[in-house]
Length: 296
Image 1 (cartoon, rainbow, N blue to C red):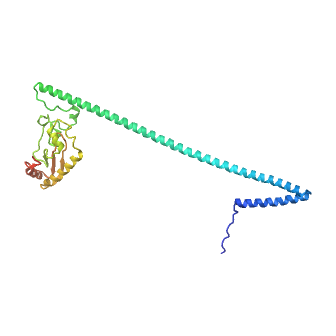
Image 2: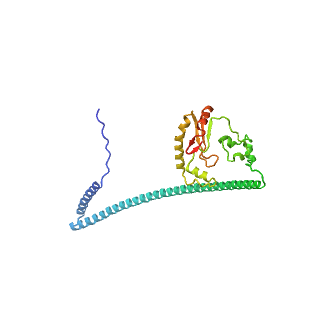
Image 3: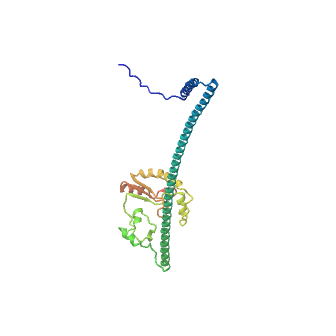
């Protein structure tokens, strides 16, 4: 099969070809004008002058056409530049408005967060004042009772709290931790279990901050000089030191250490074994032993 013929499209003439064609048309027109002048019977000088004048007129027309084209091209470029500038200004204005809207939303969110934080802080301060007033009232009542010769005991909790408790007679805190801040003065019963899988060793764990608090129980800022990182590192060292000893007796299910600074919880260690028999064996082994200069 023969190869398909290529379709030919007319090419747009370049500026150089256009100028060459224009010069050729001028020469042709000049020859025609000279022939016309010769036919009209004018002298050679007159013919040349007339031809030069016509040529000047033609060149001026061509120059005017060229200037018009340049002017139109300049106007078109100016129009495109203005359109581009307008689109750029619109984009910048839209971006500015979007940024302002985002800043407004962020400001509103920040103000709302600040308002909530202020309300929470005020609520906490109000609750703190109420607790302090309740404690002060309780202390004043206790002082009045002591002055009158009565034996002071821990007051009964409010009715709304007592209703929520299932067992009003027994001390719930002592049932959970085996310790109570009021000790023998507590108005509730302290039921000490005869047998349990959990072993309680009081004040076995100690840190520098706890030791300082032990020397001055009435100074709440006594342990502030010691960071939480130091306390945690001492807890890890204690854990790695004593847990293997407890595991030698039986399987340890839970091992908990109280870092509370209250005297009745300070440094208490709770070891839960798998059975009560293992816990009893641990009690027999560790009761009376010495650790860190103190008898367990």
